[in-house]
Image (cartoon, rainbow, N blue to C red; front, side):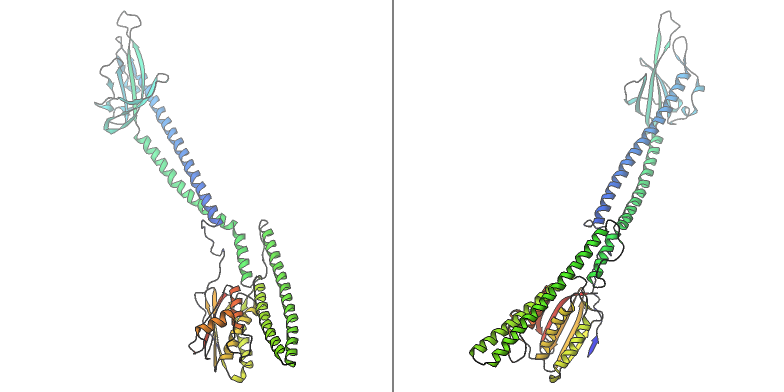
Length: 475
């Protein structure tokens, strides 16, 4: 009876670079992170340089306007015979007429006294809050203006001659001030900085996305190598196939050479193991026949020792064969085909007992290993179950993610916990009346360990023994 069962939905296959992400422990993650850091630093530095250059340019323009206002004030300021200031308003702009307009002028006597102020100042005066050293007769600084305005101030000292007296070189000195509100200047700088910030953020995000795409495209050949290796591992290919860039081509060639060399070495080792098995088994068979032909204590001792030798030879040859198979990439064995062949064969072998062997196997289930190793392990388990079963043996193969479980159960007498330890770990025979070497379960356990699997013995709901074999699988 053969019943397919649904595959386990938890089964997954290795994806390699199929889901390639910018993790920091990956090459792509490091490249993207390094490029992103340098991009942010470069944009930050560039933004600071541009902001400073714009600020300097705007301030220079503002200072140039103040110098023009100073020139206009100097042109408007005349004097009478006593050296008093006489203004020609036509040289001054209308902005100086509006109250708190942000454009101001002031003429103050150098020796102290009431200053002459623009209409825009109303009753306020200009006083430096800070100032620089005079350069070519001009002094720059700042002042607190009316309506909490922050003013940029330019001052200049001039002297008018006094002609009303007979004193030679008599003159009167005045300090001329022009000031402008820096609020508009600051707003222009703030607007420019805001534009720089959001435009550089967009540019930075665009560059990071471009870097991400570039890294993914640049590392695509490595993903192809990983996918090719995955196809080799799951048995759909025997070598790396496809076109690779010049930088990756030597790696692909070396990997193909390594795979071919490994297969060749393992093939020779298998041949040597097979030859050794035939060479040893023939003399052992001859010794057994000779001992059987001449009964006696010596013959009995020879027969016993030959039996021990035969069991040990079978045991270690099976281990050597399985260990050699692990070095070959691309091993893939359909589980159902192997189990189906084994159950058909064992039904015929044990047809005198009229045993019913039930087979339940997940469709598409594949063993990541050699067919003969799966046959060795499952054959020993099913044959052992048939030897001890009353009427019924049940074989079930279940998918469990990246492994599968082979359950072989019978309705025989079963084993105690102590007996399971003896036959499973030490390979001891519990009943000499049943044919066999007694090493079947031990061989299964050893081969399973070589594949990273395990064998567990327990009680079955059929009242007999349950052998659970866990092995790696492929999707």
